[in-house]
Amino acid sequence: MIRLNDKGSRVILQTEMEDENAQPKFKRIFGGQILSAIARDANNNIFPVAFAVVEQENKDSLGLIPAIEMLFPICEHRYCVKHIYNNFKVDHKGLELKDALWRCAGVTTVREFERRMQEMKDLDVKAWEYLADINPAQWSKSHFSSRVLCDCLANNLSESFNAMILEARDKPILAMLEWIRVRLMTKQYKKMRGSFMYEVDNGHERHVVDLAKKVCSCRIWDLTGLPYKHEISAIVKNLEKVEDYVHPCYLKETFAETYKEIIQPMPGQSEWVKTNQPAPIAPHVYKPPGRPPKQRKRDPEEPRNPYRVSRMNKTIKCGKCKKEGHNARGCKTGITGETP
Image 1: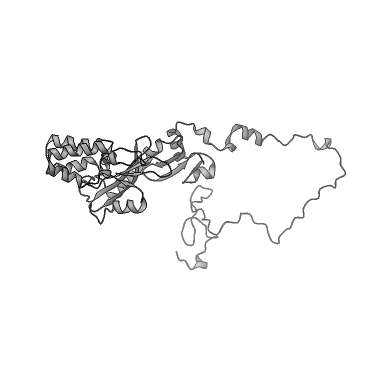
Image 2 (image 1 turned 90 degrees about the horizontal axis):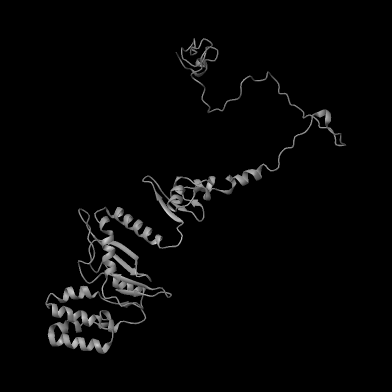
């Protein structure tokens, strides 16, 4: 257990390193182990710090203690008393010794710790020597620093985290990590006051919706001002009304404001009032040479209608090339070199 106290925040970091069976292994065909660093927030709830997947729990892949010492050099390092007892009972069995160990761990003053250790020595010298080799600041409340504001003796938070991710441990690595990420993100976000960020996944695509900024990573809401299916899912999940997230330009009040100034009706030309303004002059019309075209100019890439029919409601067929869609007058067989 490692207690973190950064800028006044009450966070207690727990990592499992004493027992080789402490970290959960993958199940079924996927090998490896999950390593996790779990903290305790001010409400004594789980606060996940980090998790990773390694081949096996050894010094090369683990490296938690050196990493923590490098990142948090002033942290207080403690051991889980439950794991200490698991190693202790291998050679020192008996309920009496077990109770004596937990009494040593639970006392809060140095003098009381010394008395409890003396009781342990009177019961079993070898057991006393085993515990005397462990720094009491790492397992007894009597030597815990008051700076960290924590008297935890066991890493139950890590065990609770392992139980929570049990459902995901038989999945492939990426699917498992994604399941854990989404679960932690959801649980952490529920503790915030006011939920405005959502990750919407419909199985085919995933987008991030920010209800506070009224934006979505799909950009449809940004471009139209109307909530799309991703935003509507988030709004409904947030127990709010979709209409409250529509852009103001679509509101009834905005529509009425748009047509507040209208084109006023006016009487006929005979009732017009004469002014001193010059009379309007008709624009000069440029007339190109040649006969005016009867059909509009088509785009070069615009396809012709191959299903044009004649007046007899029959498909037009060319008499030259015998193809449908045009007549002999519009046939380009001789020009393009095509043959019937």
